[in-house]
Image (tube, rainbow, N blue to C red; front, side, top):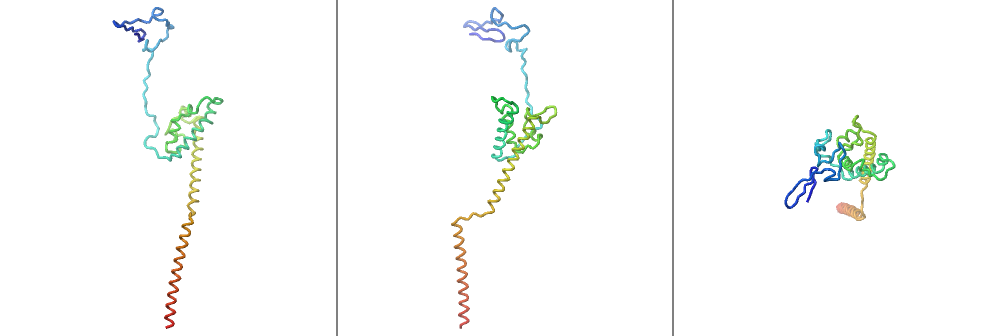
Length: 217
């Protein structure tokens, strides 16, 4: 059995293990070019591994989010997804149909906007909840062309939500002003009123009858 480790073949037999250095053209057909790196196995010092340290992004809001109706979250999500797959994709990659809109505006960005619990009316508010590098101008810390398009689309979505809420409120108000009466309840109330009038009439008649009899005496 043999294996390649650190630029040499380790050959293992039932009796012993020995190393065969990789030397062109004796033990290998690979001939590296002068002043070039081979690989991280042969020359690990020439392939430094970056040390990545994750830190919290400053300026992002943290903590418990305001609860939003699931229907509102769904409408914001659907509005952003439809926009990125049509208008945004056509403007960002004109004439290309083989790409998807999520390569520009990721699902994670859409989800954070939809579930943030606020209507993001300014770019500062947007930056407090999510960072979208494609829509940000680093040197001015302001939205670029794509960031402005996103804010315009959010404004349209929020306007549609407000109009829907107003329409639902008007419908509830108009429905509440009318009392729904079924045939059963109508006839039941009519018979009750009739019985009350009859008793009142009989009572009056008996009182007048007593007075007449007293007058006759």
